[in-house]
Image 1 (tube, rainbow, N blue to C red):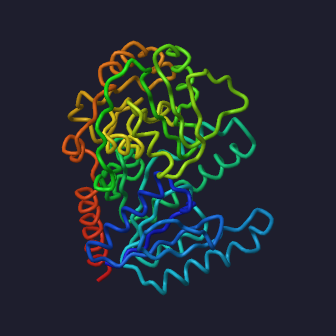
Image 2 (cartoon, one colour):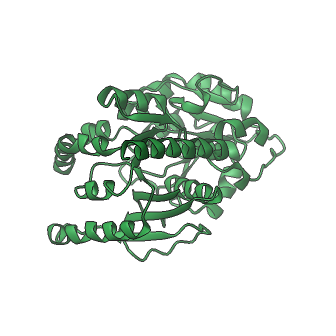
Length: 376
C-alpha cells in the first residue's frame, strides 16, 4: 500500500506524539509499504534530529494576518503534493476540522486516528477566554464534517470508540492502544536499597490541562517528608506555589531526560483526564516508564490493563480529588514498589508496538478492499 500520513504537529519536538508518528510509519515501511508524512507545521524547514527514514513534506500553516489570502494556496500545495504521491490510504491524526481537507479526503479512503475527545476539551475551555469560546463555536459547527468523510476510524480506547459510534453508527472502527518499540529501551536494574526519599518522575508533553500538574503539586505538598517529584517537559510555573520536593527540569530530549527516569523509582501518568470528560486512556509516557522498568501510578483506566491489572500498576480515582483521597494507597504502593524494576517480558505484551501495528495494517487492508469493491 501507499500510505499518506497527514497531521498537524511540530515534529522537531521530541515528545510522545512525534515518537509515535515515527514509530508507526517506520513499522509500516518495514512491512513493505510505501509511506510519506504530510506535516502541517510552524515552519517548512524544520531541522529534525532523528534517524527516521520515512520521507516528510512540511507545509507551513498561514499566519493570522495573511490567513484568508494564503489559505487556498496552502491547501492547494498539500493537494498537489499528495496527488503526486498517489496514496492508496490517507491516515489522518485527527484534530478540529480544517476547511479544505475535504479536497484531500477525496484522493483516497481516509482513516482517522482519534486520541482524545477534542470537542469535550474545547467545550471545557470555552468560558475561559474569547479565543476559547470562538474555538468552541467553530468546532461545534464543523464537528460532523471530518467524520462524515472518513472510511474508517481508529481510537486508542474503547471509551472513545463507543462515544463516536453513538454519533456515527455506520463508521467502521477499530481500537488500538498506544504502544512503543520496547526494543529501543534497555533494562536498568535497581540500585541498592537506601533510606532516601522515593523518587517519582512525571513527564508532560502536550500541556497541563489533562496532565494534572496542579494535582501533582498537591500530592507533593502532602508527602514532603518521603517523596521527591521530578517534572520533565515544562519549567517551574511563576504564578503557583511549588513545594520544595518538586524539581522542574523543563523540556529535555531523551538523552537528557533518560538519566532522570533511570534514577527514579515510580512513574506517574496523567492525573487530570476527568477534565476531558473521559475515564480511559493509553498514554505514551506510561508505556515509556514501563519500558524503563518503573512501576506506575495512573489517574484513570488504561486500555492495555482493563482485563488484567498487574501489581505494578496502581490506578487511582479519576476525579478532582482522586489523588488526594488516595494518598495513603499511593504511599503504600510507592514504599512497596520503589526498589522494583520490571523485566521486558513482564510488560512487552501490554505496550510493544509490533503486534498493534500489524493489527492497524490489517484494518487498512480491510478498509481498502471495501472501498475498492464499492467503487467498482
